[in-house]
Image 1 (spheres, rainbow, N blue to C red):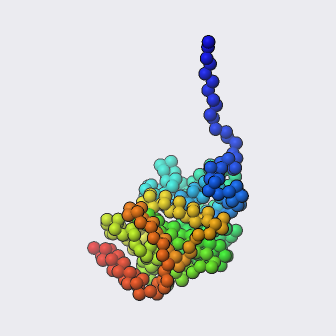
Image 2: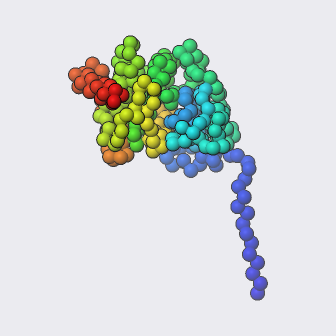
Image 3: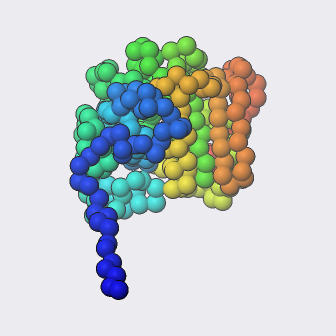
Length: 301
């Protein structure tokens, strides 16, 4: 008796099917919810650190349209944390590389790309038609960040910021009904360095990450540099993606500002709390002075 071995053809089909490509998410969401995501548009400003990770995560979730903006190019200093920062992409525009990656995941995806910096004068046009804004610009770009959150509120769309802090993530959600971005942080209007501290403190009031920071001298507000980890970036993408899913599908369970949230993987701790009096509380002002002194002493050495 002669046995003939027949090998099954496992060559993947080159024909794209949205339903099949994202079918493994079903169960966590319904078929109807998947179609809702397919019709949604997410605006992401900044495609370096967390921005690229957000875009790729949400594309794999099946979001059907994106408004993307970044004026920068990939370089070696991006390799420790940025999605698509590779030798083959050195010197290439971030928005172009990320857009190509998203289209490789979903050829039907609709992308509007901006290869110039978003300014206070262009935030309205950038957010036009978006269902949600996911904040991903550089930590130190506070002026345009404030303009983006203000415009999102004016348009009645939710906005999320998820910041990689050490080996974890600190995140905030702002909705048209929640406390505003400006109210929550209480920026000074006159001192950029002080506003950076206010932003950092507002993101992570409990400071779960502080014990893991071995050398504070690498935080330099004057040079606008701060350390980051790939673990923090990846955690941010997962958490922000979950919040986007809940908001777009109206799942509920989202605690918006003045609620703050932080997960720190190094300590295994997670905290959610409500900043009752925000920047006006005595405790907040004490923490602000303490961090300000620490930064000043570190940078003076």
